[in-house]
Image (cartoon, rainbow, N blue to C red; front, side, top):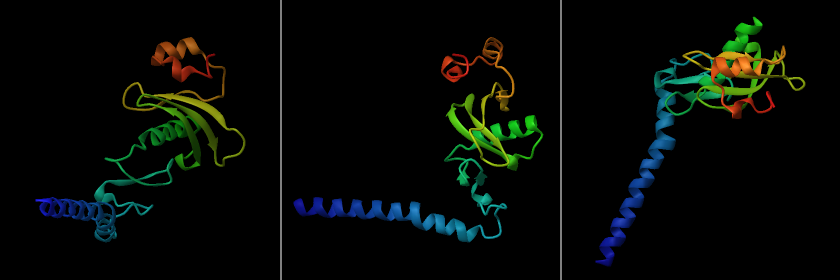
Length: 156
């Protein structure tokens, strides 16, 4: 009886080990081989839903990681500043599904950068504040329904 339990335990550990090898070693290598020529300019495997995340400086899989906040905010800042997205460098300090804040630099990361605050009231990120003018806390609170935690440091 005790021998059967030992054999069962070893078998379970073996199966789990094989599954881990498949998930974390063999499958990524297989994906890399199978997607040769099916990549974007950053060599992300588009066939397997990988895309380049500028904020993280690596390929991410859309079903496993979220990079859309950084990409959406950078796109909104690029429009506001009339610059290409590649020229926008951001640092995110706080983020949620609908609000984010941080610092922005244009072209190179020198000095402290400008503080920014963004909201996503519908499908697209909008820049609420970018450090270029005085902030109107009452107006943006009404317009974007910003929670007090997002306004800390801006409207104290």
